[in-house]
Length: 298
Image 1 (cartoon, helix red, strand yellow):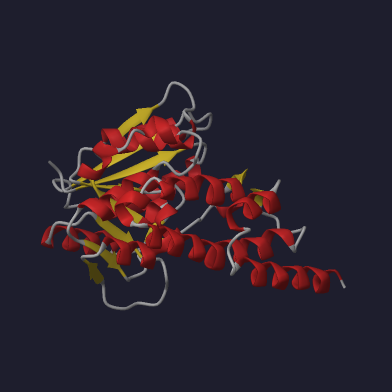
Image 2 (spheres, one colour):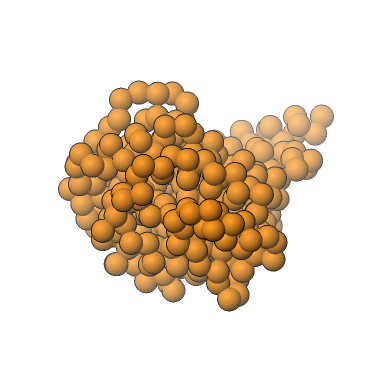
């Protein structure tokens, strides 16, 4: 068994994928016995297939899958999880690029010990890596960043407990895998070094209702783990989602009609109200948001 599978689910981003693969292949050189490179093409209509085949013909070892039809984001994620052969699985977004030396640092960490979840802190503030023996402490530290698929490497044993059919359409089918890894293994780690250049193709990101995905779908998934991780953990996650995520995106999307982002916001207030109306901390936030909205119009 290889130590690590780097799996790239991709759709219609041939030029971006080409650059991403070049950076990965360069860093895999000399580590082919440790790393599997898997590309799962979600039936792209562009030249994705030609680009991958050209790299294979040049002698690069790539496990290439092309779905006969577009399975949606969650369907492609589940293919990657279920077909990866490495001890650890890293689902890497096709527009998230490895920085120089990133793979060496990750491999050195994976060789040293057994981990459930390896979280990559994308902050530019570099500090010592943190090992966690408490799953709730780990998850409270990561919080909403557990949804960032490129930011998490997972022990393959955590995949076996997830029925991906239950999460189709949520756009968050990776989250139960990561939660299982954090909860079921003795030890996890946060790598506090910037190893990725993220969202290189941010212009085409989105296309979904951000409040449906990150309030309804995300909180419903978290609720499934309340029995194992506790109600206190859930309430902390819910509070941090409101403070660290919803506030930012409300200001970014709702105060500026010319934000240029592709996220939908239909029914945003009804969605937030349903999940937060009984929380005391919700009202100061909404009052401040209303004041900002008034002054923004002046």
